[in-house]
Each structure stands twice: as structure tokens, then as C-alpha cells.
Amino acid sequence: MSALVEMPMMKRERRASDVTLKDISECTEYLPNPVLPRHDVKKEGYVIYTDALLGEGSYSSVFEAEDVATRKCAVAKLTDVSRKTHSHCHFNEVASFKRLEPGHPNIVRYFDDFVQNDVGIIIMEKLPSQTLEDHIAVHGRMDPLLALEIFNQIVSAVVFMHDHNLSPRDLKTENIAFDPLTNIAKIFDFGLAMQLYPNPDGTMPLVNVTTGSPLYMAPEVVAVKPHDSFAHDIWCLGQIFYMMLVGHSPFQWCSNMAELRDELLVFRKIKYPSWLDYNMTQLLKGMLHFDPTLRSDIKEIKDIVSRLISYERDFEIKNPPTS
Image 1: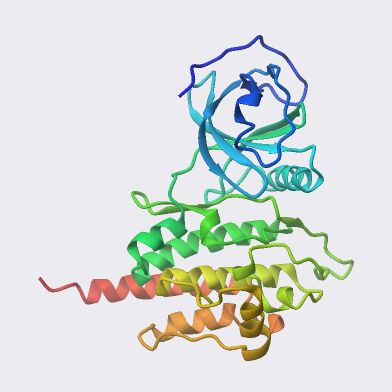
Image 2: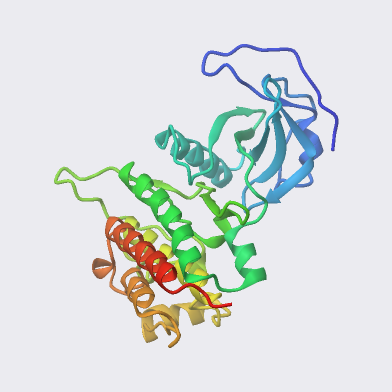
């Protein structure tokens, strides 16, 4: 890890805390098609370790960082905002975080953001390196009660986002950090999130975008139809919960977009294992309905999950495992 580099303090009106980044050109090899300066970016408040790459996405790279004042760990998400599409994702994510302030316990905490020399930087809390996707890949399907308890956290975060008229759009197991020691899940990555503004009658407008991860796209999104973005999020939640309970995606056999289109638009059928609990299957079917107007509402899902958790806990108390 690189040494701490403290640079002269610079005050700015928006926030008291800024960032220090020693020779930002050190991270050019990680950023997609970067156009980055070679001179120092002098900011205060944080230190970014440019030799400590934590991960890469389609438009950004994440590095370890540290709060100079508190010495607490953080992460810095760096994006080359000279590129139009990357710039949109960066500023969209910043706007999403600000709309969600002061935050939610199951959403990554946002600390600060700024742009220097065509590099957009977002400072966030450091999450466990393992994602829900990683956990399922190693351990397979989850215990039903544990799956419900974790899913309840995810649903709670989505309820919070929808209450703030924000549609995350890209919900998937890869975008959910999971700590197996505490069983706490946190959603991160809001580059594709969509801020919605209600119609005069209170209904949400239909959107016509195809953003998101192909395997998680709802049928109406794949069909490129105007759709309810919140209903699309519900479909993504269904896919996530299916993976938690079964251990794989309901469309894992699709090897390309053409096959996925056939599954979603032609065959329109999802296979549920016969061993899956009836209540769990019904919950999944409510989220994975091919007709978006018949999909479960997010608060209905929250209520069902809460009741199923109580039911599963009571069952375990009344039926303790025999030694």
C-alpha cells in the first residue's frame, strides 16, 4: 500500500472535508479509456491509495481511501467524466445519494463527492469485499430463514428508495455487499438509478429505457416497451430471492440475449423446484409475474416477508433440531 500523502489544506464552501489524491495518473491503467492528468490533485480530508484497487465496474474503479482526521477507512470511486456516458453515471449516482440522504442502514453510506481534472470522485463507506453473489457461488442456496432475514433488509432499502421516488434499476446479487459474520446486506452502485417525478394524479410515469444487467431485465424492458420502473425493480428482487433460495438464476441456461428474449417473451415460464416451500414459491411468483401490472407491490412484499420470518422463527422454536 502506498504511503499517506498529506497535501496543503484548501477550503471550499460546499463541505468541510475534501480529498487528497497523490498523482492521479497512477491509476490510469485501471480506469476504462482514461484521460487523466499527470499532476497532483490537491484536496484535503482524505487520502486515496492509488495502488490499492478494490474493484472495477463498466465505468469506474474503486480504491481504498482513508479519512485523514478520523483515520477511518473509506473507499473512493473514480470515474473519467470526460466521457459522456461515464459522466452521466457519475453525476447520476451522486444525485441519487443526495436524494437518499441521510441514508438507510442497508444502503452504502455516502460521504462526499467532487470532480478534479475530469476525474469524478465519490467517497463512500468501505463495505465487506464479499457480495451476495460471491456468497451464493461458494455456499450455494441459503437456509430459508436466513434468506428471508437478508432479503428483508434488501426489501427495506428498496422501500426507502421508492419512497424517495428513486428506482435503482440495477438491483442484482453482484451489487449487494454481504457480511456473513453479521448477516448484514447493503446495496451499492447507483450509476443507473432513475429519479422519478410523479404525475399530477400521483401515479408514476412510464419510462422507456433498457438500462440494467441483461439477466435481470424484466420482460417489458427486454421488449423495449414503456414500463413502470418500480415494477422492474420488483422483478429484479424476485430474481435475487430466487437465487438466494435455489442457488442459481431462473435463467441460468440462457447463454445469449436471443435465448433470454425467447424465455421472457415467447415461453414466459419459470421453473420452481418441487422442494421449494409453498409460501416461498408464492412470494416469488408474485415478484416474477410476467405481467408487470400483476406483480406484487413493494410494501406488500415487505409485509409478506415479515410475516414469513415470524412463521419460520416460530416453526424453529416449536421444532428444534434433534441431536
